[in-house]
Length: 168
Image (cartoon, rainbow, N blue to C red; front, side):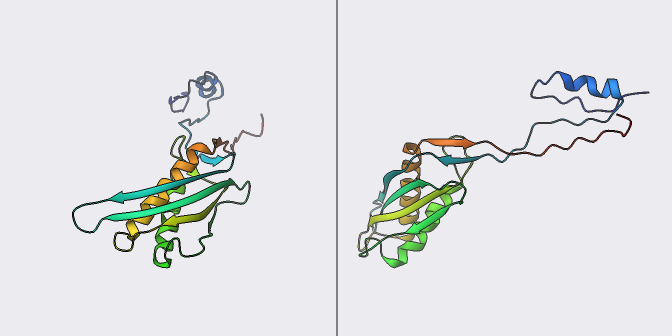
């Protein structure tokens, strides 16, 4: 009788090769497909400024954010702008920029989770500000803050299914 099994062992685990030979079983192994997550371990504050001048109207956006750990409660993005530091029409693009930045971690590009982001201040130009400028400035502010906030990779929790015959 011939053992059934794939001989794929990228991690170098040695005991796996003998399982199909000893127990005449079907074994499948491969590189794990884990969705890692990142978080931060200390609060921080940072700013992002996006400005470009291309001859005509330029692009300008300025955003200040604070990041805090939010363990076990997921991500929260709070708009704490007072006094019109960022005009109302640019709040939604600013929030979109933060949401975009949460999808791309600093350690290995994993999703960022369990973080509270507060948009606390900003600045605009009457003619040069645009939605794309605020979206980009918010992304830059978040990335600057994330680097200083002691990012950490969260350990994944995985389930393993092992099925054996009754006689074992």
